[in-house]
Image (cartoon, rainbow, N blue to C red):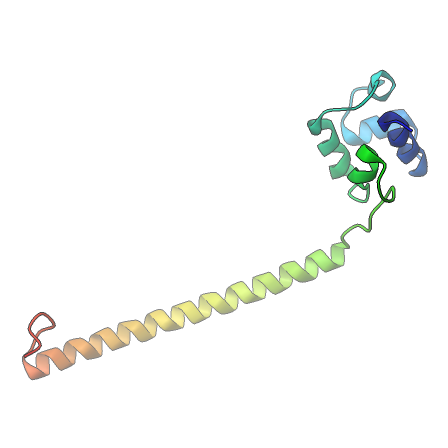
Length: 123
């Protein structure tokens, strides 16, 4: 089974006609019928964007299964929420450390003035 045959099989498995598939992935009408062997990376990218469950290994080499388990939107959303929460925590911690650093610098300056010494002449 050739590349184009696997692509047509995938299209059929989705319950789509070639024209509907072409519209969905942004190909010109009749593009699939003109393909003889394979297609370019840009076209593959369009297909994967429209059908993230398509296993490209299967499409290109016939290895593996036709479809892979797609990433669940809920899992992506949860990961994004966790990243946002961690980002806020790290930002707050960073601001806390900056403030602590500022206070310590002021304290160091007071100590220097109080003892009459400077950092470049500690004695």
